[in-house]
Image 1: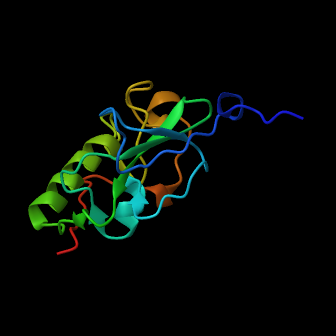
Image 2: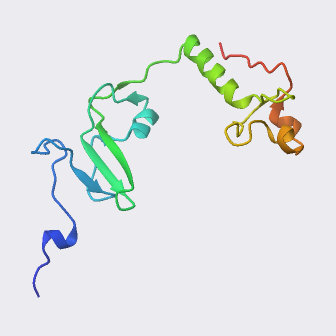
Image 3: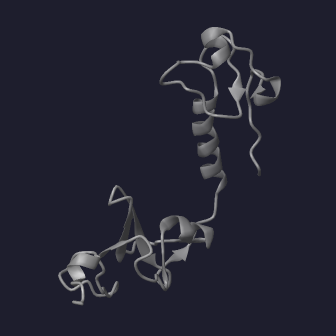
Amino acid sequence: MDRPDEADTGLVDVDPYDPGDGSLPVLRWRQAGYDNLATRRQLRQMGLRPGGQQPVLRIECRRGRRFAWLYRIDLAKPKRPMTLAKEAALDKAMAARQTCPGPCGRRYAHCLPLKTLGSCLECFDDTPADPTTYIAPPAKHLLAA
């Protein structure tokens, strides 16, 4: 029996640190081991960030419709700490997404469908809201610090 070609199997031996032609290598899901490489989400779980480095590898799944960039862990930098100014800005942005612009003016614990409905469900079609899911106006959140 003849041995199948590499093109038939779809497997390619690639060094992720030396793509050769200047482009990033693209590997399929679980095609190779990813020693010292991590996605942004994995770096964040480790308390790290890419820190300006370029990705060294791209992994794909679902026939290329989903992909992730991989970064070197040894070149990653620690995450920047949350400051009071950042926390206040995030709270203000979330308040805009969680506060009903309708007559009730409540701030909910979840984001409202403002693009589709324009208000909370109670203001839109009189669906009663659970009182534990919102803060009555004036909706103010207390910051952690």
